[in-house]
Length: 124
Image (cartoon, rainbow, N blue to C red):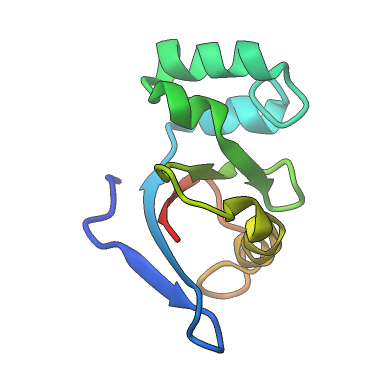
């Protein structure tokens, strides 16, 4: 319904790595466009970024820094890198994407797919 007021913290088993995330809903119109393939991972990145900025009021950097879609790599959930000046971020990208795919497929309750959620990676 709105941007989450809490920042979620996840720690690695060895406690050396921490990930901070927030969640917010995607517009229903955008979720439908992603599912139809108009705004999904196979669409033109420049055109997609332009549409996200103009039609859905996304930030310029957020529109260009979508890490992945899920579930099944083309669903209506996204992970967006909103970090600023974080080193070695590319080293955890595959792990974050893998965890996101699993989580968006299984959901928080009843093993149902999630839909229409934007996860913002705040800090690492």
